[in-house]
Image (cartoon, rainbow, N blue to C red):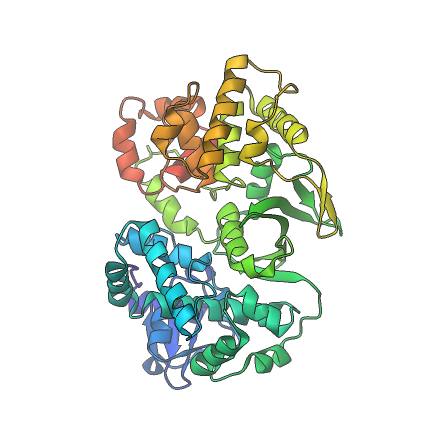
Length: 483
């Protein structure tokens, strides 16, 4: 099964107590009203005989239910990225969320051809045929990839109507619809409401794009912020907003355009308030949201992850499990790994700042003076004169940048072919740059010391098998657990 639904007894207790740990892990369908809700919905709890539980919002929608206007299911945190064995489907869903099928929803013959091409491209990216991919979607979700894309765009558009003051036309294109006509059509079909009716009920007056991203306890934003702060690139990352409040902000390059986001913890809520400047191109918003969620790891089910990686630990060892901090890109993470070889964290961070200063100019983005981490092409053509480190490491950095300039996501074999890059460097880059959840850095000095202290020094492969698919979380926990 693609995603396991908790038992009816657990679901009942969770919804009646409004337990935020289950937010996004199941949805309550209320057939007496025709809506579906999050477990934390503030409305009066319906009678048990009138409800049915669903593993996903999509399953509830497929049963003919509409999203609740009070708890807004589109704002629920996503479920764990490892929801079973259907990893191909998981990857395809993530790519659709990031816009792989956006703007292919018109009914003209030209648009139909574009949609077919987008579908073939999506199937190729996950390594299967388009017919088989459609079969996976129908078997596990009860809908086609196109219907899934429509519904995901619908939920994003609904969130934008509720939470931002973007003009309705901009909302349509920001959510990935190919036309306002199709946008209105999907709203009428799925919600029996118009976009203007939802906007009329919204009380948001602020300008710009500001969305709430929910998370499940025990997500620790301040611990994540401290991790970023210790490794920050001056000018490209910041930790206080204009009001002086603690935040995490940084520049990113998404879909070829530079922009930034800023996240602040919402007091009394399990959510982050995220302000986004998507490089002036609002149509790439879905890709921006996918990257922001990856960097902040807001969809992590930390309770489940902690229980899983804690199980093989010796008595008396309690892991400090934290979220997986994402780097700005795979290339940035690879640069961090190369610059961090055989030096302290402080030295590596200083070198990273010098690299950014030498290869990229300060720019103004959305009213903010800032820096953007350089592209692979910029680094590949640099002299690296400002970096005080061995020539062999400079050469490795330049060769690696040249490799990334030819392919934005080179495979492990290609990276290992660069002299001076070993397994630790590649694994670290995958862990932070691609947010691969299953990287146990058994060769890392600190990790080796912790494993030795716990008696796992001679059996890291056995431990890796026991904590999979969350090896990256164990790596982070070992870095931050005092034995």
